[in-house]
Figure 1 (cartoon, rainbow over the protein chains, first blue to last red):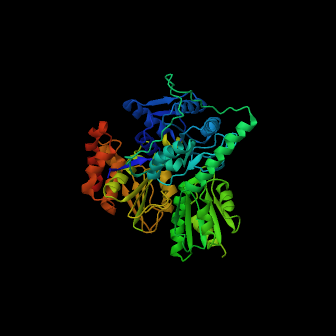
Figure 2 (figure 1 turned 120 degrees about the horizontal axis):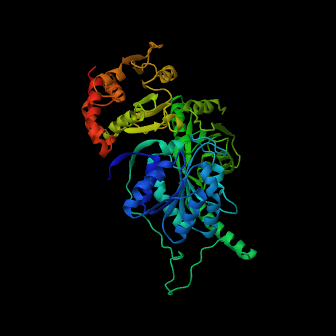
Figure 3 (figure 1 turned 90 degrees about the horizontal axis):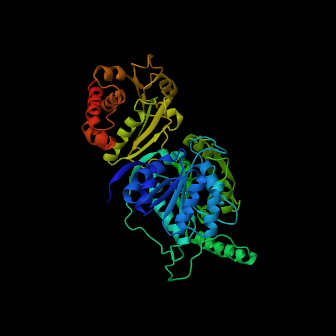
Length: 350
Length: 177
């Protein structure tokens, strides 16, 4: 058992990435994720890795594409406005079938917005962000420990399915400190026979490319990609359920919103309200089955978000609108209080 | 749930985040659940700074402290803002060398500590925060005083360990009041 240490979420991501074998980090500073870059700048030179602060986010994401194409574990991190700039690169990564880890420590938007926590990049993350038919794997950690664990898992998943994986956190998760155990002994690596590493005149050329001018060919690529997505939806959903077994009301929330909601659920239970929490950990694929199962006994759902109501659409789809879904929201960097969530729970007429 | 919610609030530069980190580390070393959440951004550079610390025996839900059991106020704006939020039967520790008003509430315990003055008088400039923490430990027993050394060792980076002694003195000064 390794020691428990007190770390910021952002630092835990950086150290976990290094322990997972990432030696290539490309970034550009932006609050509230700058500690990821700062940590990498300190550590990478000492372990023979590369830390590179690019001249822009666009440049940084394209460096990740280059490194990933060469078959190494590469990552970048940013916050909301920076992720918008990186979205072109994310689409190219999906098109080229390249694995990499992208961290988004969200802040309020749109535009430059503010620097306080937000979850309003949910649509951007779960729908792809860039152009074209594609998805990223999207993981939403709910603690500093999960920031570390999901970083390791994210690299593994990205390489297993040859696609970008996004760690979707927020300013609170990035800035807060909690005890964390960095125990990354058995890192799973995936063979990359497709990597462009030079043929040494011993094999055919590998080609990493997203361009296909023959419509039928491009259609085939997309269909194949979506077959893989269907497999992922079947096998890679992750969620935590808390007091859901006998629940009449189900609160759905991820990340910091789930932490706040858990307090409200505990308080409501003390008052005799049968309420439970489903915390999606994978946002894409969305844990539809957990929600559908809960809808067999629950009569009302509440989506708690730091956005104007984005995940609520996935909640409604997952239960096929068979139950009413209400929304608790705060935006612009404001975090809902447990009392606000509790009030919404108590307002439900069963 | 045996949880203590602590809010440190003051100006940027008063060591608000550091003293919060010290308590969080001490909780960690006792194998308790802890969380530490700073205010971040422009307010850190000379404006108001605050930080939420929770020590608990159970997993911590929200890391945000809206209603503290213990408030440590290091300037008037913070005291004005957070005094009404302190839980009934909670504590407010007030740096009375910087805050020149009496408590408005009589349902909480208000403890006046002229921490900045005391620190200055004892050659511990800049360590009013730790004088306050010493007094907090004395009044609330939130952590055992005899454990301060190991938390200091963790929270002060290796190249600044020469400052550990001054921190220890400041803690003892507050604890001895």
